[in-house]
Length: 197
Image (cartoon, rainbow, N blue to C red; front, side):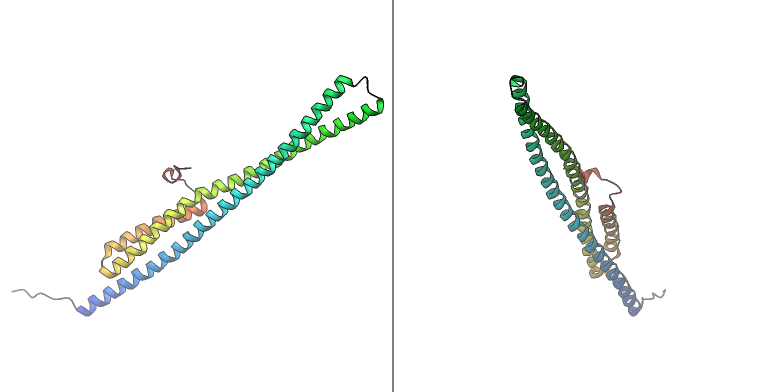
């Protein structure tokens, strides 16, 4: 009868401890990546809200300038009609005053129109910043979810002393890290994450 050699229990225990330590170390790395992804998501959301607020402020300012421009345009039109209807019958001095006022209203209307253009550029810049940060946010959200699941799978691997949950945690962590990296850089866009935008 052939002899069956039983494995040494101490060797098995030492190998199991080494495996558990490695998984625990990797799980700690996952936790660090989770913290970085969480910080990126928090900053993206904060920047998105700030940019939206700035864009709204600029559009309100734009609206105020548009109202002033319209007021000067109306006053200019009234003076033009007045000068056209009774310009020849007016005293020279009165006509000069109306013409000077007409010139001032025309200049003010042009000034407000030009200022509106600059304000619109600034508002659109803030909207682009808002949109960029809004596009980043889902990558951070999904990265956080995958990294949290990777941490749990690492813990399951340690408790069960089983390698498949650990390998699953590695895959989840790599995908989560790639999503977090993309949240910072926006190197690629996944249509699935932008369908609601």
